Structure formats: C-alpha cells, structure tokens
Length: 400
Ligand code: CTP
Image (cartoon, rainbow, N blue to C red):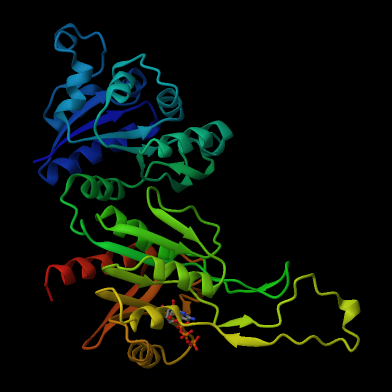
C-alpha cells in the first residue's frame, strides 16, 4: 500500500478531487488530504475526511500537528504528493518559494515526487506569467497531468480543465508502482522529415508527431530510458526525456544509429521517401527558368527502419514499424513487415471516421506480428501507445 498526500487548492474542480480519493482508495492505496483555506470554501473538509478515512489538514498553526513539525512530517510520510486541483495562484507561489499556508509550506519542504493537475480559466492558463511558471516548475522536475480542453465552469472554452480522474490516476500509478521497463533503453522516431529544395522550400508530409510523442512519453513513464528523435512538429515534447530534433531522413538515420544499443525501437515517423539531389544553395527564381518548367531530381532516402532492423551490430531486441495506407492495408503491412525485417507492425488506415489520421487524436489501427493480427479499432493515439507498451512489457516478461 502506497501513501499519497493530496493537496487541494481552491478551484471549482476541488469537488472532483473527491472522486480521485475514491479511485486511490479503490486501488488499495492510502490518501491523506491537505486543503488550502480557499479549497474549504468549495468543499467541506468533512467530505475529504469521510472518503479518505484520514484526518484532514488545513491549518499551518494547528498546535497538535505543528508540535511534531507537521508540514515536514506530512511530506516525509508520503510516497507521492499530488496537487489537484492546482490553481494559477498556488503554482505562482511555488515558483517564488512562498510558504504562507500549510499547503505551500509542505510544497516548499517537499522531498517526494510531485504530480500537479492544473485547473484554471483558459485566459489564466494562457497568460504569459502562468506559462513562465509552468516552464519553471517543469524544469524543476515536477510532473504535470493536463489540463484538458473543454468548456469551463465560467462558460469559456479552451485549455484549463482539470484532467479526468482516470487520467490523473494513471499518472499516479506510473509514479508509485514498480517501473516495468526500468533498465531498458528505447528510441522512438516521430513526426515528418523535411527535404530541402532550396533554402526556403522543402518536400514534407502532414505527420503531426502525436502518435510517436505519445509512445515516447509512455515508454519513459514506464521506466525505459527513452530517446525521442523527431522531425519538426507543432506539439510540445514529453517532459523529462532526451529529444533530438532532425530535419532530413539522413539526419534521422544518424540519430537512430547514435541511439544504439537499445532494447526497444519504435518507428512512428512519416519519413520522406525522397530527397532532392539538385538542391539549390540559393532561392530558386522563376525568372531564371525560361520555359516555365523546373526540374527537381529526386533520389530515394535511406530506409531508417530497415537499416536499423537489419544492422548486424546492436540490433534492438524489438523493432516496431508503423504503416499508413490508403488501400490493401493489412496485406501491404504484412509485406512491409517482412521486407523491412521488423518484429511488429502497426497498420493505420489513412481515413478514419471520414477524417484524415493526420493531426487527429484518434487512430484506427491493427497490430501485426508474424503470427498474429489484432484489430484495435478506432481509439485515441494515447490508447494506441498504452496497448503497444503493454505488448512491450509482456514481451520482456515472456508473456504471450
Ligand atoms: N520508414 C523509414 N524510412 C523510410 C521510409 C519509411 O524508417 N525512408 C519507416 C516508417 O517510419 C514506418 C515504416 O517504415 O515505420 C513504413 O513506412 P511507410 O511509409 O508505410 O513505408 P514505405 O517504405 O515508405 O513505403 P511506401 O511509402 O512506398 O508505401
């Protein structure tokens, strides 16, 4: 049984922390709650005491508690501290080392991992001051879950909603349980590659990097030492992992080779199949092409996945490819799995629910090995990452 110290600050989402307590108790762990003064305006401490079946702490100057230096002891007794909901105010106080309440004193004196679930109005979340504070807190090694997008209590719509209880609990479980991939080394390719034509133009594709980033993030949370090798994308990188930014397929291959030896390799990137051999060092001008035509000479790029999969030196134990097709999906995925000598292949349908898979949060995929085909249906890219990581854990535990 693990001990969780739940700090609740004063936001409208405070009532949802009651469900989080239920979930923690249902999983058999112990939870003690600390409420800020504002949190007690939203929900009665008695509700937290009843559900947690533990004393609830609210006051820094509680005589009985402070005679034992309670704000130190509360964090020392816990395996993990969870701050949910975390308001913009308490996050700003953390950045500046303010300790004007029991909650902020615990956070300042804390020596345990801290999981933060922010909750605030979209304008507050997007305010440059909050953005700066979040950056500092992430740099200090604190782990964030959410916030989610959606409609807020104030009626505005955007990012700032506290994450769903199930998502917060998932993060808690990664932090308190044995890391099943501890000791394993992984790398993941993600996003598109871009192949220059001249200094301002390039050939690329519409990959968002969402799937590869979700896989890299989860491998890292599960304990694997993870290296994300990514083309240019517009999404944030997962926290606390090594990232190498590349542009071309040649650079991606070089980064993958430098990541060997590794136990796990996942190739979720949409690599450009071609590069321009007659690349121009200066911007190509229309006026210089007399007959309105322009010739770009293309040469095939190296196949990153196939090169790693067929390397004689330090081939990863698991090589997982992805493939996106517009027709003959399974047949073509099986063919590529053999041709590229990879162990597993995840086959995506290009069009899902009448929408392109690019930039979509959902993915309709099938999981293939040499003797298995599982249809995972239309699920979120995060769920694809979870299912794949479960397969990886089972592989290393010899579970078939
Ligand atoms: N891949 C790679 N290097 C390349 C091309 C593809 O590493 N130059 C990897 C992708 O990351 C993916 C898998 O190979 O994991 C399949 O990619 P896909 O684009 O479906 O296959 P291609 O070999 O490019 O075949 P085609 O585009 O002709 O269908």
